[in-house]
Image (cartoon, rainbow, N blue to C red):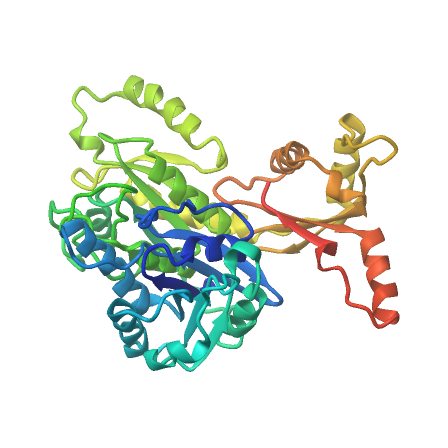
Length: 462
């Protein structure tokens, strides 16, 4: 069975510092941070690795009164976050007394029966109130932070990991799980029904019909396959309400639970930014990926020329996942539908293939000799040897020195060389770089009773 990472959701009123806290925890600037209240209109996702724990962090929009239907949708985002998340972070502004809105948010979080952590942010300001002022919210775990100055963030991470399991080996049940991923109304449920051979899901020409993850088991060529049909994801910034429901968290869960994802795109609306975002999440999660162009029957005058003209345009949009196969389908006519099962089984076998260390090292040395890695003056990276440490997805570890100077373009070069040798189409491959000098220094630090440098191993996704 594919692994599922825990999900941690950040909820709270607008302008209390949720996005700043999110950025500190994922160590990026993914969320938009601004002084104006209500900047975040869509949930932002990030993967956090802390100690031996990995989890998804979700930054939700601020909870406001339902002044209009769009604000009602934002409230629905937060309600769904409390339903789906494993841990809930309620953020308040420590310079403001707890309001009725804060009490409402805390009540919704506590009602979920999930672990809830209260974060009193902006604690660095002189107007900051003592924690006793927030005890009436009923949340036992209270942590003072200043996201802007990176104060208290480690305390939050430490509290989170006490409430989620450490990353463990996944159980094996020999079931291939395929998730149907995509924007609302691209034909996921229709394809789901066609693949399953029965009306398991509701099929309607209304975006967002599916909210939960629908599942059905089928057998194909003596292989047990579980299909996961997900709700569509609302477009960023789109203000239509009542049609496209928020469901990023459930889609994320389906990705994590799956082995391979079919990313569906309507042939009449191709190459959107959200499609790219979804492909990036699937890639980051290390899952197999097939780009599926749906509703091919709706194209007038379709022929090989049309398909050959569209394919390069789609490929340019997904140039960061050139290894993902592209297929044109129609659930109405059944075109290429059964090919999807065959494609998934082929990808599964490629994800599980193991390599020989000798062949890998010959490949590495040839790549280095043909194109040595660049570095700084008198400080060039040295790539000594490579080993495969895992499958599904294939994972390779390169040992050497001065590896922090290896440029991302060189990692892409190594990935291309590896893919030319082995057929890894349909799956991402992952790399880690272990600097032997840092490993040696860490051993000395441990012997001296000092803390090791945690950046000795660097995981990258070329």
